[in-house]
Image (cartoon, rainbow, N blue to C red; front, side):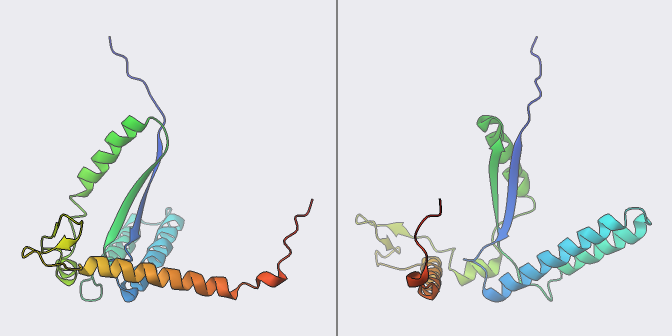
Length: 176
């Protein structure tokens, strides 16, 4: 006599371009593509009352542009899901299903990225927690270097922004 219960669940799925695996040109290209796709979606919404064949042509053109390998370099995307409300256990089941089904579409890193960051090479941690290769020699992975570089760039940018603030001319008193 099990009765099914309806429950409300809210969650968001975010997809964004990875700063680690994509260069500035790829990120700019992805940003332009996002804007173009948003414009096409708005255009299609406005044209709902017109012929469906025209809508399909616009959608097909957008899809072809997005997948044109002669113009586009592979973009590495990061997918994140976040539960807003609802049962956490049920959300985890939905999340696992989304990721499992997404594997059919998002099928790993492009070969160029794997080679660029030498991701096929297996490393180990020695007793001191240092990354070493098979010969036991200390190595620094290209991926780790990229992440460190990005963190340093972000810290420098933050420091420059802090330097621009004129703290002497800020009114620190609270208005009550």
